[in-house]
Picture 1 (cartoon, rainbow, N blue to C red):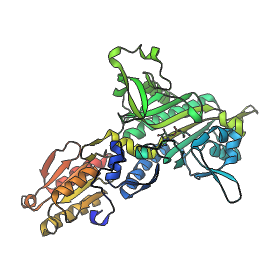
Picture 2: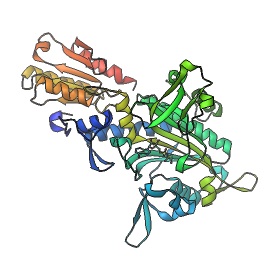
Picture 3: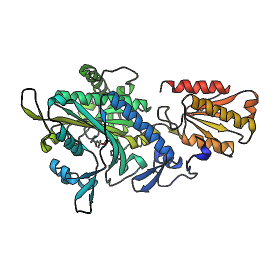
Picture 4: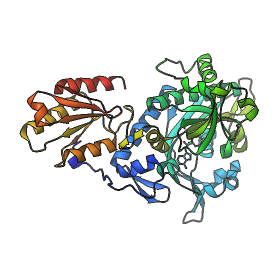
Length: 445
Ligand code: 5CA
C-alpha cells in the first residue's frame, strides 16, 4: 500500500479524552473513531489488525477441532425468558422492541441461541462431542465504557460452545479450549495467564480468565511469579488426547493465580514470599464449564447409549477480539507509538523514501515494494512529499516492526537502512538483502 493513497487520519495532538496509552495511540494512529460512547468505527488500519487477530483466532479454533458458524447480533427475548436470564441480566442488556411490539435484544452473549440451535437438530450421543463457535459483535450497555476498545459497549467477541454427553467429556472440551487459547495469545505476541475466576452472569464455578499483566488493567490479580516463566511455545499437541490436554491444564494452572473475585489470602500466603505478586491485568478471555445450566432450562437433551435421555453438558469460551488490540498495545509501545508484534502487525514493514521525486530513490523504493510483495509480504510505502522527520514519526506511531529507509546518499553506496522498531537498531545493507531478511523473519509466522 502506498501511504499517499491510503486512509490513515493520524492526529498530531494527543486526544484529551484518552486516559491510557492504547486508547491514545489507537486514536492518534487513526485506527478507530468513536461513534458514540463505547461504540467505534474501525478505520482501515484498526480494521486490518482486527482482521488479523480474528484470523489467528479462527485458525487456532479450527486446529482444535471447533466448528465456525455465524449467529445474528439481534436475538428474540423469548429464548432468554426460557433460560431465566431475560430478567436476571439487568441493565447491561440492550432491549429493543420491533414494529410488531416483539421484545428483542442485542446479544451480550449467545448461550441461549446456540442451545436452541442444538436442541433443534441434535438428539443423540452419537452426534457428540460438538463444539461450535462464532466471532460476532456483542453489546453490553456498560455503565462506564472507557479506555477505548478495552471496555466498549459494542465489542467483537469470539464465543464458542461445547456440547458433551458427560461431565468428563465437557472438561476435556474445557481443557482443549485452554490449550487453544494459550496458542492463540502467544501467536499474538502476548503472555495471557489463566487465572481462577468467578462465573458471573454466565454461571458455573469452573472457570478461568486469561489475563495480560498491565498497570492499566481493570482487574486486580494475585499470582506466584513462577507462572510467568511458562511458555506454550511450538510444542505439538493432539487435541483429541485427553491426557495431553489435561497435562497442559495442570502445568498452567497448578501455581497460584487468581483474580480478586476468588483470591484466597491464606492460600496465597503459602507461596514463598519472594514469589508472591499482586498486580493489575487485562482480561482477554474466559472459559467456563457450567454443566447443564442451560440445557436443563431449555430442554436440550440427548439419548444415551443405554436408551435413556440426559441434558447435555455445556461450557462456553470467549475471547475479547476487539479488546485484544488495546491489550497488545498496552503490552507493546513506547513514547513514540505502537510496536506491533510480527504476528499481528497491519503491514509487515514500512518503506520510507527520504527524497520523494529523486529518480534513483523512487526507483529503488518501487523495486523494494515489488520484491517484498513478490515474497507475499505486505509493505506500507510512505511516498508522500514530507520531511524525513515527519515520515519517521508517522512510522513510529503506526508501529510497524521493520522499516526500510531509502535515500540518495545510501543508494550511491548501494545500501538502504533496515531498522527494528522494537530495538531502534539500524543496519545498512543491499536492498535485496533487506528484502531477504524481512522475508526470513516472517517465514515462520
Ligand atoms: N459467553 C461467555 C464466553 S463465550 C462470555 O460472554 N464470556 S465473557 O463475558 O467473559 O466475555 C468474553 C470476553 O469478552 C472477555 O474475556 C473480554 O475479553 C471480552 N469483553 C467482555 N466485555 C467486554 C467489553 N465491554 N468490551 C470489550 N471486550 C469485552
